[in-house]
Length: 298
Ligand SMILES: Cc1cc2nc3c(=O)[nH]c(=O)nc-3n(C[C@H](O)[C@H](O)[C@H](O)COP(=O)(O)OP(=O)(O)OC[C@H]3O[C@@H](n4cnc5c(N)ncnc54)[C@H](O)[C@@H]3O)c2cc1C
Image (tube, rainbow, N blue to C red; front, side, top):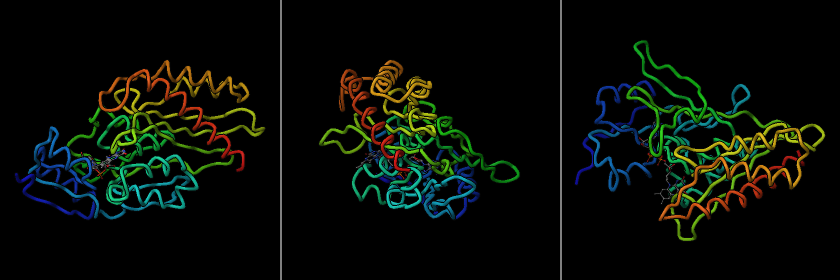
């Protein structure tokens, strides 16, 4: 069965959004196609009249440092992220989360923009970005032209597999602050040995120690899947930054807070709710240990 009739390769965001406006609901953006083509084959979106490929758009496949941020274009691939010295230095959680996605063939084409736009609560790259407190750039076609706006990453998730983008919008990229001294991040996940796509549970954390290296000044924790959209464990973050010295007891209190706040489900393909509950403890201890040890040497 023919899945689409037209395939466009715009080179600017303006051109891409004008194509989207011209074809309306009959058009879909495509990047690596590793989610979209499967959705078209097996999922709800059986076909699209027109595909608009975003991977040739100027600047969308670049990684740069700008105004105190690492800026990553929406069409940057997982392999580019994995190999980027700038992201290795400033956002290790993102490198770690992107480097476990699929296999090399998937990572060579699958983009971070596609990972976020697909809007699954357990998407690995998304969990890495969320822990880094990333912003997303939403590009909107208005009468005067394209308006680009940075907004918090979480603001674009509407539910499992649903984002808030409207017909005149697309993702332009992501940004997170350059790493400061005494700051580090880490990611880990539990995956079925034979699993190919989403994990049983993924968890990333970014922490910043105080100047005496005894307390945490800042902590950001992202977990997926732990709710209908990618999940920030804000109660656990509050425990960790309560002013108490970092200790095994404080970490255990954070574990309890994360477990209490997470909305875990049993999935017949992956794991039970009870198993995921236990894995929050395993991953949070592991990731905090790695991140706090790492920032000690900075
Ligand atoms: C074998 C296999 C293994 C996988 N393993 C993993 C895994 O371990 N972890 C994981 O998280 N994922 C995994 N995935 C899922 C997938 O590879 C990722 O989610 C990937 O990042 C999707 O990116 P893409 O560029 O291929 O997106 P596409 O499939 O091209 O697009 C996905 C969605 O995003 C939209 N979109 C794309 N770019 C934009 C944009 N700039 N603006 C607005 N909308 C846009 C598309 O319209 C579509 O709805 C796997 C997939 C396969 C096939």
